[in-house]
Length: 372
Image (cartoon, rainbow, N blue to C red):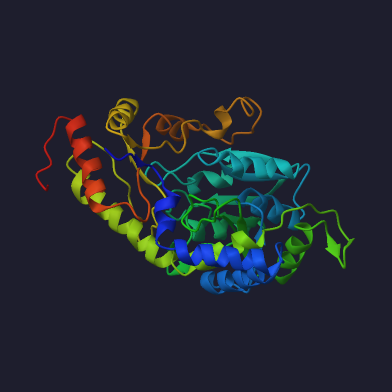
């Protein structure tokens, strides 16, 4: 029996194999490997896609966040509000700058930040909010933007799991001061290695991030203290190819999600929701059940490998225990961590494989799928 993985970049890339291989060879033969034409064209294409004037290619999504904070002069003695139910990278990027992450609880239905709790977390040290668009679903970014305007805070969108998602027909990454994207291989827009992108409407922010990503160089002389966060030409070339397929691939993810939702609604699982005026791009299809661990083991016995995003909130990791400021209790964050399960979803996952997953879940609950 063929294993089914939670994500599978190989299957997604298979139909693009020849084009990707030819482009990689072209880069290798061209002799320019860092910050050359493919990076410039990717930046231009991604800006056009998101609908902003500027896009900056960097080495990773983590760097996209930390460089954005640094470009806004956020660092030591400053606070940045975000969530604990996120990839560790979100919090790690804040700490890289010397700033302090302040954690807020999440909404029970979308798993994104609970907007009603943000204002209580704001102090005189607060300089920014990192709003994480999780699993492919937008956070209530327009409400957060209003809060940022009220308190004169910077707004950073972490769009690492939501390439191509929209709210009120605006692409995520075009609403805050900056949008930060990871292009790790499993992402909706994934490279074949580490890569990241920053989008912004601000010329000054874009200019500073471009300086910061390469030692603060102007004519190879450091004008400000920077670092090495350059995207290589091979990753940029691959991302240019895959950007043309992003909308199609997101539609494939939605097709799989719709199949799951239609067939699993009669099971005890709590299924994903989509808020009004949003598009969901289903980076993950996350269900909830108190029998999560047993279901995961049952699926694994049938060679179906579901994931958990995330088994531990950031503040429960050993590196962060008892040292991150928490604005209020994180009851929902902590309670869902033992209940959430990410079902396999990726372009290239076949319908018969989806039904195998669905029927295995029915079998676990002792039910019969009458739709199949």
